[in-house]
Length: 460
Image (cartoon, rainbow, N blue to C red):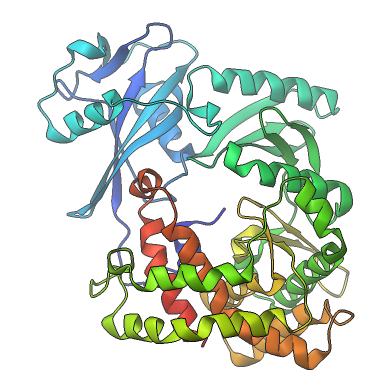
């Protein structure tokens, strides 16, 4: 899972990260309809300030709640995300308390009777009071789910011979998944629950763990009904923190080898629920995007310029032929990660000694042309301070070597050149289709659309 800066190719140095001000709807552990009020601040919701993080990251929120109020808590769901004003972003979350309720400055009141003088507090409370139901299997948003997950994790870790967990931290929660970090004497593991829409990630992760165990984290256990995964933590370092280009090239080669090996297993992957994303559907989707000036935020400081919009529209009539040419290069559809930023690759050792690379977070996995994967990795070289034509060529050459048995070298090079801009256009189209309710809570999804278009145009 990428951070916003990963996803958009790095934030400009001149932009100062805002402070996040979190307003909290803290549910009482045992009394329905009762929430916490911070009397030390008058009649106000509990509030903490943190640095800026990925909008789905919550560990720092939970740590700050415990530090300020003495409550062990987890976030059930985010309620709102404001625009930056005077260097501050207003956010609000619904929070569940675990364990005893300590004596603090907090008072407990019936939510129906609460009246708040602060406008931002009222907005947070109104967002919480709005009708809400859990959809798409996002059970982690329900009170009591965390304890049920803890019970399963405890019994599973013990059964695997890893011992009882000594610490479980909620790392991330949002519409697509909830992630917990599990520490015990025998290992560090990550628990992940995915929504119904992410069922293919659950199935594909199990498939890869069984068929290609060296390419993904070790699967300790899973629960198909809850779409739960328990994965051993990756050894080594995140690729975006590696300065050795040889390791980047080796990781690209290994990923290409995984894709080449899956060419003959596409039918099997489709049977377990991995969805197809055909190339011939992309031109129409891009045409619709090119006419959506609101989503592209045409003419705004963070949106597409009018020149970029004109360039995109001029490209549309040629997209169908570009897609047909890519399909005719001799490389069939295979497994495609969908989010292959370097933050999703861990490497250990070194190339000389036979180092390893492991790919995480298959949330956006699909069956598609495999060469739609590589462009984010080449952008990652720039973010890591490794940008040069020679380094990009080295990475691409290593990746293409994995497909040497499938098509001639000249055809492979042509296919990769055709695919590079299509990767980012596909990314823009997918984020344009994101639900408005989700994008409101994660504004970087909105920002990513014009940025992905800009990256596509730069690769034409």
